[in-house]
Image (cartoon, rainbow, N blue to C red; front, side, top):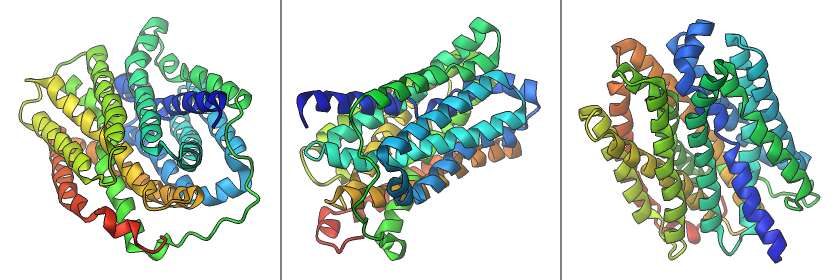
Length: 389
Protein backbone atom coordinates (compact mmCIF):
# COMPACT_ATOMS: atom_id res chain seq x y z
CA UNK A 1 0.00 0.00 0.00
CA UNK A 2 1.12 3.61 -0.57
CA UNK A 3 1.59 5.75 2.54
CA UNK A 4 -1.71 7.60 2.13
CA UNK A 5 -3.63 4.42 1.42
CA UNK A 6 -1.91 2.70 4.34
CA UNK A 7 -2.90 5.49 6.72
CA UNK A 8 -6.42 5.42 5.33
CA UNK A 9 -6.53 1.67 5.91
CA UNK A 10 -5.47 1.88 9.55
CA UNK A 11 -7.84 4.79 10.18
CA UNK A 12 -10.79 2.98 8.64
CA UNK A 13 -10.13 -0.13 10.70
CA UNK A 14 -10.44 2.01 13.82
CA UNK A 15 -13.54 3.89 12.67
CA UNK A 16 -15.35 0.77 11.51
CA UNK A 17 -14.52 -1.13 14.68
CA UNK A 18 -15.83 1.67 16.91
CA UNK A 19 -19.32 1.32 15.40
CA UNK A 20 -19.77 -2.43 15.89
CA UNK A 21 -20.65 -2.72 19.60
CA UNK A 22 -22.62 0.35 20.80
CA UNK A 23 -25.83 -1.26 19.50
CA UNK A 24 -25.19 -3.95 22.16
CA UNK A 25 -23.39 -2.30 25.05
CA UNK A 26 -25.47 0.89 25.27
CA UNK A 27 -28.40 -1.22 26.50
CA UNK A 28 -27.12 -2.79 29.71
CA UNK A 29 -26.32 0.32 31.83
CA UNK A 30 -29.82 1.65 31.08
CA UNK A 31 -31.61 -1.68 31.39
CA UNK A 32 -33.44 -0.74 34.60
CA UNK A 33 -34.92 2.39 33.02
CA UNK A 34 -35.71 0.53 29.80
CA UNK A 35 -37.55 -2.27 31.61
CA UNK A 36 -39.47 0.24 33.73
CA UNK A 37 -40.55 2.22 30.66
CA UNK A 38 -41.33 -0.70 28.36
CA UNK A 39 -42.36 -3.51 30.71
CA UNK A 40 -39.86 -5.96 29.18
CA UNK A 41 -39.06 -9.06 31.29
CA UNK A 42 -35.50 -10.20 32.02
CA UNK A 43 -35.66 -12.78 29.23
CA UNK A 44 -37.19 -10.31 26.76
CA UNK A 45 -34.53 -7.78 27.73
CA UNK A 46 -31.87 -10.38 26.96
CA UNK A 47 -33.20 -10.46 23.38
CA UNK A 48 -31.94 -6.89 22.94
CA UNK A 49 -28.46 -8.38 23.10
CA UNK A 50 -29.19 -11.81 21.62
CA UNK A 51 -31.05 -10.65 18.49
CA UNK A 52 -28.18 -8.55 17.08
CA UNK A 53 -25.82 -11.45 17.69
CA UNK A 54 -28.19 -13.86 15.90
CA UNK A 55 -28.15 -11.44 12.97
CA UNK A 56 -24.35 -11.38 13.07
CA UNK A 57 -24.33 -15.13 12.79
CA UNK A 58 -26.93 -15.52 10.06
CA UNK A 59 -25.55 -12.73 7.85
CA UNK A 60 -21.97 -13.96 8.30
CA UNK A 61 -23.02 -17.40 7.03
CA UNK A 62 -24.02 -15.82 3.72
CA UNK A 63 -21.02 -13.48 3.74
CA UNK A 64 -19.60 -14.97 0.53
CA UNK A 65 -22.77 -14.14 -1.40
CA UNK A 66 -22.86 -10.68 0.17
CA UNK A 67 -19.30 -10.01 -1.01
CA UNK A 68 -20.09 -11.30 -4.50
CA UNK A 69 -23.32 -9.32 -4.87
CA UNK A 70 -22.44 -6.04 -3.17
CA UNK A 71 -18.66 -5.84 -2.85
CA UNK A 72 -16.92 -4.30 0.14
CA UNK A 73 -17.68 -0.70 -0.78
CA UNK A 74 -21.45 -1.04 -0.96
CA UNK A 75 -21.71 -3.79 1.65
CA UNK A 76 -19.94 -1.85 4.40
CA UNK A 77 -21.77 1.38 3.45
CA UNK A 78 -25.10 -0.46 3.74
CA UNK A 79 -24.08 -1.86 7.13
CA UNK A 80 -23.25 1.60 8.48
CA UNK A 81 -26.55 2.98 7.17
CA UNK A 82 -28.48 0.23 8.97
CA UNK A 83 -26.71 0.99 12.25
CA UNK A 84 -27.46 4.70 11.81
CA UNK A 85 -31.17 4.07 11.16
CA UNK A 86 -31.45 1.69 14.13
CA UNK A 87 -29.98 4.29 16.50
CA UNK A 88 -32.22 7.02 15.08
CA UNK A 89 -35.32 4.88 15.61
CA UNK A 90 -34.26 4.17 19.22
CA UNK A 91 -33.98 7.90 19.88
CA UNK A 92 -37.36 8.75 18.35
CA UNK A 93 -39.43 5.71 19.39
CA UNK A 94 -39.34 4.16 22.86
CA UNK A 95 -41.59 1.10 22.69
CA UNK A 96 -40.31 -2.34 23.56
CA UNK A 97 -41.26 -3.62 20.11
CA UNK A 98 -39.21 -0.84 18.51
CA UNK A 99 -36.16 -1.82 20.54
CA UNK A 100 -36.49 -5.43 19.39
CA UNK A 101 -36.86 -4.42 15.72
CA UNK A 102 -33.87 -2.08 15.92
CA UNK A 103 -31.86 -4.84 17.56
CA UNK A 104 -32.43 -6.86 14.38
CA UNK A 105 -31.75 -3.93 12.05
CA UNK A 106 -28.60 -2.78 13.84
CA UNK A 107 -27.40 -6.36 14.25
CA UNK A 108 -27.75 -6.98 10.52
CA UNK A 109 -25.70 -3.84 9.84
CA UNK A 110 -22.97 -4.93 12.23
CA UNK A 111 -23.02 -8.39 10.65
CA UNK A 112 -22.51 -7.04 7.13
CA UNK A 113 -19.42 -5.15 8.21
CA UNK A 114 -18.00 -8.01 10.27
CA UNK A 115 -18.48 -10.45 7.39
CA UNK A 116 -16.49 -8.25 4.99
CA UNK A 117 -13.66 -6.84 7.13
CA UNK A 118 -11.53 -10.01 7.66
CA UNK A 119 -10.96 -10.52 3.92
CA UNK A 120 -10.09 -6.83 3.60
CA UNK A 121 -7.54 -7.21 6.39
CA UNK A 122 -6.01 -10.29 4.77
CA UNK A 123 -5.72 -8.44 1.43
CA UNK A 124 -4.70 -4.93 2.47
CA UNK A 125 -2.43 -5.89 5.39
CA UNK A 126 -1.07 -9.22 4.16
CA UNK A 127 2.36 -8.66 5.76
CA UNK A 128 0.91 -7.43 9.08
CA UNK A 129 -2.30 -9.40 9.48
CA UNK A 130 -1.86 -10.05 13.26
CA UNK A 131 -1.31 -6.35 14.01
CA UNK A 132 -4.19 -5.27 11.77
CA UNK A 133 -6.49 -7.81 13.41
CA UNK A 134 -5.42 -6.44 16.78
CA UNK A 135 -6.18 -2.83 15.81
CA UNK A 136 -9.58 -3.84 14.42
CA UNK A 137 -10.45 -5.94 17.50
CA UNK A 138 -9.28 -3.25 19.91
CA UNK A 139 -11.37 -0.60 18.14
CA UNK A 140 -14.41 -2.86 18.19
CA UNK A 141 -14.07 -3.37 21.94
CA UNK A 142 -13.31 0.28 22.58
CA UNK A 143 -16.61 1.17 20.91
CA UNK A 144 -18.42 -1.16 23.28
CA UNK A 145 -16.75 0.35 26.33
CA UNK A 146 -17.37 3.93 25.25
CA UNK A 147 -21.05 3.16 24.73
CA UNK A 148 -21.32 1.60 28.19
CA UNK A 149 -19.65 4.65 29.73
CA UNK A 150 -21.31 7.49 27.84
CA UNK A 151 -24.85 6.16 27.27
CA UNK A 152 -25.89 6.67 30.92
CA UNK A 153 -24.17 10.08 30.96
CA UNK A 154 -26.07 11.19 27.86
CA UNK A 155 -29.31 9.75 29.24
CA UNK A 156 -28.75 11.60 32.51
CA UNK A 157 -27.97 14.88 30.73
CA UNK A 158 -31.10 14.73 28.56
CA UNK A 159 -33.14 12.97 31.29
CA UNK A 160 -34.14 10.48 28.60
CA UNK A 161 -32.86 6.92 28.23
CA UNK A 162 -33.72 7.03 24.52
CA UNK A 163 -31.09 9.70 23.98
CA UNK A 164 -28.51 7.41 25.59
CA UNK A 165 -29.28 4.77 22.96
CA UNK A 166 -29.80 7.06 19.97
CA UNK A 167 -26.68 9.21 20.29
CA UNK A 168 -24.64 6.44 18.62
CA UNK A 169 -26.05 7.45 15.25
CA UNK A 170 -23.41 10.21 15.24
CA UNK A 171 -20.31 7.97 14.99
CA UNK A 172 -22.17 5.83 12.44
CA UNK A 173 -22.80 8.93 10.33
CA UNK A 174 -19.17 9.99 10.66
CA UNK A 175 -17.94 6.53 9.63
CA UNK A 176 -20.31 6.46 6.65
CA UNK A 177 -19.01 9.81 5.38
CA UNK A 178 -15.38 8.74 5.91
CA UNK A 179 -15.97 5.42 4.14
CA UNK A 180 -17.48 7.22 1.16
CA UNK A 181 -14.52 9.63 0.99
CA UNK A 182 -11.52 7.33 1.49
CA UNK A 183 -10.37 5.02 -1.33
CA UNK A 184 -10.34 1.65 0.39
CA UNK A 185 -12.33 -1.51 -0.11
CA UNK A 186 -12.73 -3.67 -3.18
CA UNK A 187 -15.59 -3.11 -5.56
CA UNK A 188 -18.08 -5.83 -6.46
CA UNK A 189 -16.07 -8.92 -7.27
CA UNK A 190 -15.88 -10.03 -10.91
CA UNK A 191 -13.56 -12.99 -10.34
CA UNK A 192 -15.39 -16.18 -9.50
CA UNK A 193 -14.95 -17.19 -5.87
CA UNK A 194 -14.11 -20.88 -5.26
CA UNK A 195 -16.94 -22.70 -3.50
CA UNK A 196 -16.54 -22.91 0.27
CA UNK A 197 -15.73 -26.50 1.22
CA UNK A 198 -15.88 -26.20 4.98
CA UNK A 199 -19.42 -27.38 5.63
CA UNK A 200 -18.24 -31.00 5.65
CA UNK A 201 -14.85 -30.29 7.19
CA UNK A 202 -14.44 -31.07 10.87
CA UNK A 203 -11.69 -28.47 11.30
CA UNK A 204 -13.95 -25.67 10.01
CA UNK A 205 -16.68 -26.70 12.45
CA UNK A 206 -14.16 -27.00 15.28
CA UNK A 207 -12.88 -23.47 14.57
CA UNK A 208 -16.46 -22.18 14.53
CA UNK A 209 -17.41 -23.85 17.82
CA UNK A 210 -14.14 -22.73 19.39
CA UNK A 211 -14.66 -19.12 18.29
CA UNK A 212 -18.18 -19.14 19.71
CA UNK A 213 -17.27 -20.64 23.08
CA UNK A 214 -14.08 -18.67 23.82
CA UNK A 215 -15.95 -15.41 23.12
CA UNK A 216 -19.42 -16.10 24.56
CA UNK A 217 -18.58 -14.49 27.91
CA UNK A 218 -18.38 -11.07 26.27
CA UNK A 219 -22.05 -11.06 25.34
CA UNK A 220 -23.12 -12.16 28.83
CA UNK A 221 -21.00 -9.53 30.57
CA UNK A 222 -22.10 -6.75 28.22
CA UNK A 223 -25.73 -7.67 28.80
CA UNK A 224 -25.67 -8.39 32.54
CA UNK A 225 -22.53 -7.21 34.38
CA UNK A 226 -24.06 -3.82 35.32
CA UNK A 227 -27.29 -5.55 36.41
CA UNK A 228 -25.23 -8.00 38.51
CA UNK A 229 -23.58 -5.18 40.42
CA UNK A 230 -26.78 -3.16 40.66
CA UNK A 231 -28.27 -6.22 42.39
CA UNK A 232 -25.32 -6.04 44.80
CA UNK A 233 -26.14 -2.39 45.60
CA UNK A 234 -24.17 -0.39 43.03
CA UNK A 235 -25.70 2.61 41.22
CA UNK A 236 -26.34 2.91 37.48
CA UNK A 237 -23.26 5.00 36.66
CA UNK A 238 -20.73 2.99 38.74
CA UNK A 239 -22.02 -0.33 37.40
CA UNK A 240 -22.00 0.96 33.83
CA UNK A 241 -18.44 2.23 34.30
CA UNK A 242 -17.35 -1.36 35.04
CA UNK A 243 -17.96 -2.21 31.38
CA UNK A 244 -15.83 0.75 30.36
CA UNK A 245 -13.12 -0.40 32.77
CA UNK A 246 -13.32 -3.93 31.35
CA UNK A 247 -12.97 -2.48 27.87
CA UNK A 248 -9.63 -0.87 28.75
CA UNK A 249 -8.18 -4.33 29.30
CA UNK A 250 -9.95 -5.77 26.28
CA UNK A 251 -8.33 -3.11 24.12
CA UNK A 252 -4.90 -3.64 25.69
CA UNK A 253 -5.12 -7.39 25.13
CA UNK A 254 -6.46 -7.04 21.59
CA UNK A 255 -3.49 -4.83 20.73
CA UNK A 256 -0.76 -6.59 22.72
CA UNK A 257 -1.48 -10.26 22.07
CA UNK A 258 -1.61 -10.06 18.23
CA UNK A 259 1.64 -8.07 18.27
CA UNK A 260 3.22 -10.92 20.26
CA UNK A 261 1.60 -13.38 17.83
CA UNK A 262 3.41 -11.65 14.95
CA UNK A 263 6.65 -13.19 16.25
CA UNK A 264 5.61 -16.80 15.68
CA UNK A 265 3.09 -19.12 14.07
CA UNK A 266 1.80 -21.05 17.10
CA UNK A 267 -1.19 -19.24 18.63
CA UNK A 268 -1.75 -21.77 21.44
CA UNK A 269 0.44 -20.29 24.23
CA UNK A 270 -1.25 -16.90 23.94
CA UNK A 271 -4.69 -18.51 23.78
CA UNK A 272 -3.91 -20.53 26.93
CA UNK A 273 -2.94 -17.35 28.79
CA UNK A 274 -6.10 -15.61 27.57
CA UNK A 275 -8.45 -18.42 28.59
CA UNK A 276 -6.78 -18.76 31.99
CA UNK A 277 -7.35 -15.04 32.59
CA UNK A 278 -11.05 -15.49 31.72
CA UNK A 279 -11.44 -18.46 34.05
CA UNK A 280 -9.83 -16.65 37.01
CA UNK A 281 -11.98 -13.57 36.37
CA UNK A 282 -15.21 -15.57 36.40
CA UNK A 283 -14.13 -17.38 39.58
CA UNK A 284 -13.56 -14.00 41.23
CA UNK A 285 -17.08 -12.88 40.30
CA UNK A 286 -18.40 -16.10 41.85
CA UNK A 287 -16.36 -16.16 45.07
CA UNK A 288 -15.66 -12.53 45.97
CA UNK A 289 -17.50 -10.10 43.66
CA UNK A 290 -17.27 -7.17 46.11
CA UNK A 291 -13.60 -7.74 46.93
CA UNK A 292 -11.03 -6.93 44.23
CA UNK A 293 -13.93 -6.22 41.86
CA UNK A 294 -11.81 -4.37 39.35
CA UNK A 295 -9.21 -7.14 39.28
CA UNK A 296 -11.82 -9.74 38.29
CA UNK A 297 -13.35 -7.45 35.68
CA UNK A 298 -9.89 -6.63 34.29
CA UNK A 299 -9.01 -10.32 33.97
CA UNK A 300 -12.28 -11.06 32.18
CA UNK A 301 -11.70 -8.14 29.84
CA UNK A 302 -8.09 -9.09 29.10
CA UNK A 303 -9.00 -12.71 28.39
CA UNK A 304 -11.98 -11.86 26.19
CA UNK A 305 -10.15 -9.16 24.24
CA UNK A 306 -7.25 -11.47 23.50
CA UNK A 307 -9.46 -14.45 22.60
CA UNK A 308 -11.47 -12.51 20.03
CA UNK A 309 -8.41 -11.28 18.15
CA UNK A 310 -6.43 -14.51 18.45
CA UNK A 311 -9.28 -16.85 17.49
CA UNK A 312 -9.97 -14.81 14.34
CA UNK A 313 -6.25 -14.74 13.58
CA UNK A 314 -6.11 -18.52 14.05
CA UNK A 315 -8.92 -18.82 11.51
CA UNK A 316 -7.19 -16.62 8.94
CA UNK A 317 -4.01 -18.69 9.37
CA UNK A 318 -5.78 -21.60 7.68
CA UNK A 319 -5.72 -19.95 4.23
CA UNK A 320 -3.17 -17.84 2.36
CA UNK A 321 -5.68 -16.62 -0.22
CA UNK A 322 -7.57 -13.57 1.16
CA UNK A 323 -10.95 -14.45 -0.36
CA UNK A 324 -10.83 -18.06 0.81
CA UNK A 325 -9.68 -16.90 4.25
CA UNK A 326 -12.60 -14.48 4.24
CA UNK A 327 -15.02 -17.30 3.43
CA UNK A 328 -13.71 -19.41 6.30
CA UNK A 329 -13.77 -16.41 8.69
CA UNK A 330 -17.36 -15.64 7.67
CA UNK A 331 -18.41 -19.24 8.36
CA UNK A 332 -16.57 -19.30 11.70
CA UNK A 333 -18.11 -15.99 12.78
CA UNK A 334 -21.54 -17.09 11.58
CA UNK A 335 -21.66 -20.24 13.66
CA UNK A 336 -19.72 -18.60 16.50
CA UNK A 337 -22.05 -15.63 16.85
CA UNK A 338 -25.08 -17.90 16.86
CA UNK A 339 -23.49 -19.64 19.84
CA UNK A 340 -22.76 -16.24 21.39
CA UNK A 341 -26.41 -15.29 21.03
CA UNK A 342 -27.38 -18.05 23.44
CA UNK A 343 -25.10 -16.72 26.16
CA UNK A 344 -26.96 -13.56 27.29
CA UNK A 345 -30.29 -15.37 26.99
CA UNK A 346 -28.92 -18.22 29.13
CA UNK A 347 -27.64 -15.72 31.70
CA UNK A 348 -31.02 -13.99 31.90
CA UNK A 349 -32.81 -17.35 32.19
CA UNK A 350 -30.51 -18.50 35.01
CA UNK A 351 -30.98 -15.14 36.75
CA UNK A 352 -34.75 -15.52 36.56
CA UNK A 353 -34.55 -19.15 37.69
CA UNK A 354 -32.13 -18.74 40.61
CA UNK A 355 -32.55 -15.08 41.57
CA UNK A 356 -28.88 -14.24 40.96
CA UNK A 357 -26.15 -14.40 38.32
CA UNK A 358 -23.68 -16.71 40.07
CA UNK A 359 -24.80 -19.85 38.22
CA UNK A 360 -24.16 -18.11 34.88
CA UNK A 361 -20.60 -17.19 35.90
CA UNK A 362 -20.06 -20.85 36.87
CA UNK A 363 -21.10 -21.96 33.37
CA UNK A 364 -18.71 -19.44 31.78
CA UNK A 365 -15.83 -20.52 34.03
CA UNK A 366 -16.35 -24.19 33.15
CA UNK A 367 -16.51 -23.28 29.45
CA UNK A 368 -13.20 -21.39 29.64
CA UNK A 369 -11.49 -24.34 31.31
CA UNK A 370 -12.88 -26.74 28.69
CA UNK A 371 -11.55 -24.53 25.89
CA UNK A 372 -8.13 -24.54 27.57
CA UNK A 373 -8.05 -28.27 26.88
CA UNK A 374 -9.37 -27.96 23.32
CA UNK A 375 -6.72 -25.36 22.39
CA UNK A 376 -3.99 -28.01 22.32
CA UNK A 377 -5.32 -29.43 19.01
CA UNK A 378 -4.45 -26.26 17.06
CA UNK A 379 -0.85 -27.17 16.27
CA UNK A 380 0.36 -25.14 13.24
CA UNK A 381 1.46 -28.38 11.54
CA UNK A 382 -2.12 -29.62 11.66
CA UNK A 383 -3.40 -26.88 9.34
CA UNK A 384 -0.42 -25.48 7.44
CA UNK A 385 -0.07 -28.74 5.51
CA UNK A 386 -3.75 -29.70 5.49
CA UNK A 387 -5.99 -29.58 2.36
CA UNK A 388 -7.97 -26.39 1.78
CA UNK A 389 -11.06 -26.10 3.97
